[in-house]
Image (cartoon, rainbow, N blue to C red; front, side, top):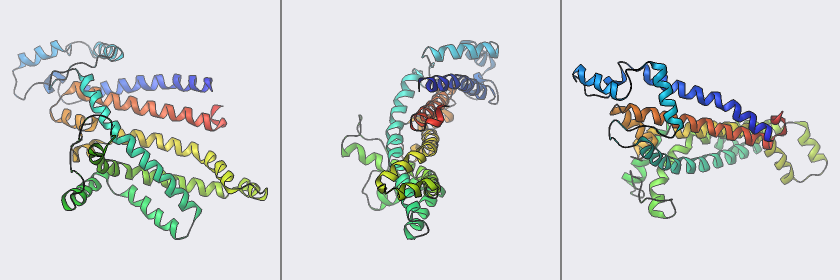
Length: 313
């Protein structure tokens, strides 16, 4: 198991290096120089040159990259161009807010996906299969931002049960005054994982139920609760892999949900940074989201190896 962890860590290092290279290159490929993006339109060339010299944009590209990379590795993400505050403080405060709704949406979405997919497989071609298949297809097909707007229109505007926007009191969501602000964003964010993961679970469980070892276990008189443990163990690696990808997509794709609900997370922070042309914040936010995506999938690979011995080879 330790060798598997070491191999996965070694494989992750060049991926992380590639992520930093890609993030830096994307900023460099933007139209105009980075100094041009940091000053108001129509600014005199002298001001642009001074800004470029201040931030080191007048140096060769490879030197700019190495300087930025060493700063990132030391924990220095620079100063926000728009606010002048340290990027790390703003970014990690926004990340904690994003994780609140993302983790809750992952628990809800993955839990319902496993439940719906398993029930649909057990009652294959019967009415529970049709009902849950329609629900999973709807979750996969409906845009989550459209569902977010619909939830606001129904539960906030029409029924007035839940607040339409905001984050509520600070701290962990331990009481209703905090949870009531999270319910609608969590529901909207969890719909796509319900559809994607649920359909995979249904297909995987159907395939396992059709295999000969299930018939052999039944013939030996093994109770179905024990048989389901074998089914879950065989279905877990594929489901975990997709859950890891979906969790990464949920963190990175929360920008629309956070914009609809005015939720101060990384998505809204990135959206504001794009409109204010805050290059430093854009670069740091995209890098952090990419690193989280890689880290989540690294953790999923290790969990797959712990569950399935074949993955350790």
